[in-house]
Amino acid sequence: QVSVQFCKQQVCSNLVQRTFCSTNFLRPGSTTMSENNSGKRGYTTNSMAPKKVCIVGSGNWGSAIARLVGYNAARLPNIFHPTVNMWVFQEQVNGRNLTDIINTEHENVKYLPGRKIPENVVAVPDISEAALDADLLIFVLPHQFIKRSCAPLAGKLRPNAQGISLVK
View 1 (cartoon, rainbow, N blue to C red):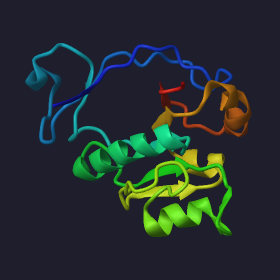
View 2 (view 1 turned 120 degrees about the horizontal axis):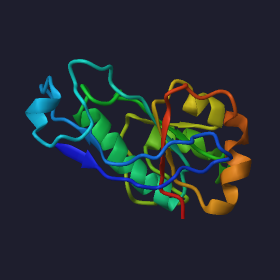
View 3 (view 1 turned 90 degrees about the horizontal axis):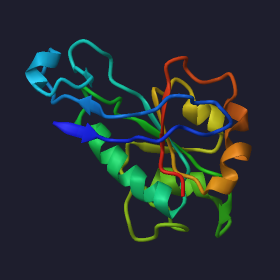
């Protein structure tokens, strides 16, 4: 069983106004809540489509989280869509776009050098495109960039999208 515990009111200019408290993802093959024996809300793998995850942020912290999320999305295809989009602020590193480097070398050479990012994590320079159809958005940005970075998402998120704040 994979448990994720978060209890933070989401920010981001009121784009995500839910509290993400104690969501349980049941192990693959489980079909009912009673199999969990926890009495907590849960998502079962057989009754719901896999969740599409988007990571909003790609600095050192965002890239470290992308490693974990990418690995787990690939490992748990009944729970998560295998492709994880990661919004990357487009910048040049040695004359190349950082998104191109991440997508070809699977490493954020600027912010997390020497650590491979799973191949199922795709760097996307447009935040609206990265978040398209996402069920879960993991915000991994410094707090001062949230308003400006999330403004393009207004009115473009799925109605039931949920956010997880790893804002520092």
